[in-house]
Image (cartoon, rainbow over all chains, first blue to last red; front, top):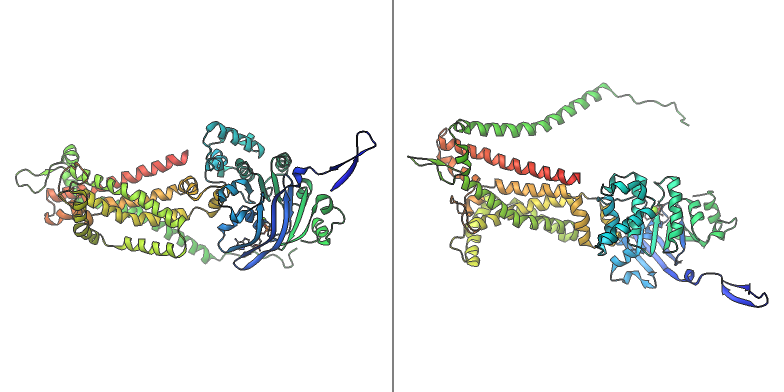
Length: 274
Length: 303
Ligand SMILES: Nc1ncnc2c1ncn2[C@@H]1O[C@H](COP(=O)(O)OP(=O)(O)OP(=O)(O)O)[C@@H](O)[C@H]1O
Ligand SMILES: [Mg+2]
């Protein structure tokens, strides 16, 4: 989008883009993605881009394929026997299905699952797991990184004095934040959050949302959420997915306005159906 | 909200009684295990007990002189037999533990479909081979191999026995170890792999710690099998009373001694009673092994 703005002198005009050039680069490109579980297709050929350093919201009713979509991006879908992916997913212009080093891809993408899965390790080891797997050994660097991630996940203050105790002994909401810290620990370029706040109280949710707004400077964030208002608060653009198809993908101004391009979007956002 | 008036379902008295009955039955099953262990211990001890008063504990445990049938001066020192049992067991475990646990990891994590099923069937077959057949294999197959590869004079020795014991305990370790690994939830695997861990990192950083109790149980069952095994070691270790200097020396174990000599003793004789005391000693050794393993697990858990 181009805009003419008045120059300093008032009489001449300069041509500038009102969008930061960084924001225009495509971080993820998805073309005609199809996904089937054992022959039953659940994502029916969708195409969209995620721009670098944006918060990209995905909303949609249950079973619309949101989680499955995320799992395609970091290729964790491969753990499900019988899942078949067709089409193209590119991260930084590289086709993920052709990437030889899938571990590198997975470190590039931080993933927070809806139900927290604390590894049966101490809190510290949970967060240090990915950096260690990537070959980080230096104790000082690890300490600093663990602290930074736990702070970002709004968990540090609650666990400073028990970093050595089992991560699975934390409360549900704390475990969820632990998985957020863990997803940040490998300094991903893309952070995928799948309904991260279902087990977290509203106050902490707000704190994490603030962190996400900060993190956006460093990484691209995909936010899958059942809370339409959360997408509205945080996202730059939001995609409405329904039964494996994109109903609408627009900037938040359009999506959450009184007349989005698709009638269904309006109805879903305002709780009229779904 | 409820269209009909809510009716509470009443429990019939019969159900309550049967509930209590089942509870009692399960209780009996649980306690019977304890009763069996104690009564076995009691009966074995009772046969050997009269000799206890005449027995010098130090000599019994540490002397290596085992001449139970001497007319003039019988000697009952089981030191060499204890060393025989322990050395052959330890050597067997050095071979079997890495193999058993490695195979368990392989079957459970790196193997799928047909290959997995085939492997499991083969391993179960291995577990079903009677120990006398193993002894036979030790005598006729292993012995010449040992002689030819290591250029030692005698093929039936500690090494031969340990290999057989290892082969016998590996199948137990694999199947129990695989169960332990299978019990680790898949969500751990996904979470670790999603963090960019390789398969191998997943195994040694997540699965082994998560399954450590079950894996230790697998190892313990293997140890138990090795300590208690009789027929194969009787046939394949050389059955000679001495402290081994190398792993290619023949040894004799506690179990083999009981099996070989009990039939020749007259009931109630000193020799007879000492053999039962050896049984008590075996009991004690396995008990100590289990107990220390338990303590180790508790120690790990506290951390
Ligand atoms: N492992 C699986 N095996 C078979 N089918 C699956 C599997 N996972 C998901 N599905 C199917 O794929 C479809 C999309 O599921 P998905 O979990 O992606 O939905 P979702 O949008 O994340 O839903 P929710 O909001 O409830 O989390 C559903 O119909 C579901 O039944
Ligand atoms: Mg989901």
